[in-house]
Length: 186
Image (tube, rainbow, N blue to C red; front, side):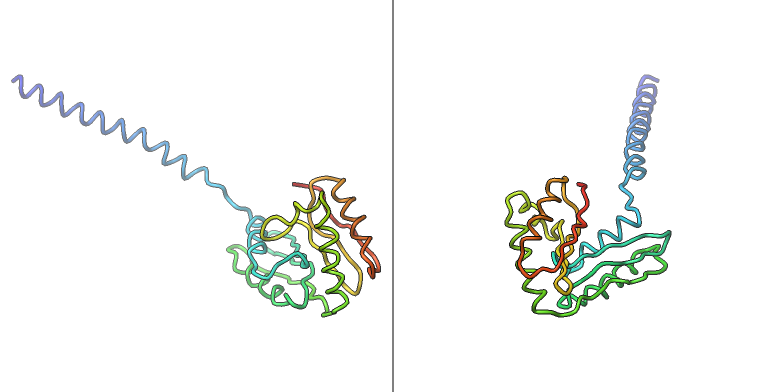
């Protein structure tokens, strides 16, 4: 009888340990499946646009999400004209997007504008306070030039950086006007 009793005690301990380890593992599995970072449609659109291969400092892509419809706006240089179509296709491939209105403007080719782009880039990003905005694959500040008119687009950290960028951009010779559309954010 003693061996039968010992056997039952061991069997009971095994069952108890098994159920205890199962109950301890279930909450962690549940926590892992209930707390993933869910990307909103806006986050997904932003990610898709940032991943475009020819999107650069002289291009500006913006978007608006209205429910399941996405409206793309902005400008791309003629050298990166394919970016307009790539952006539309890429955003259209996001699950849940039902319609994409692609209003991205392809800027006309112009050697004069290309010279201004290069001069603006050197002037703005060689400034000690603004050089950090060239970090990363896609700079936070974009320089859009159309027919000699410059528009600064993107995000800077503070008002001082925005003001400096506008002042420096205005020093480039041959520029007809500078519009400082930089936003302050992180």
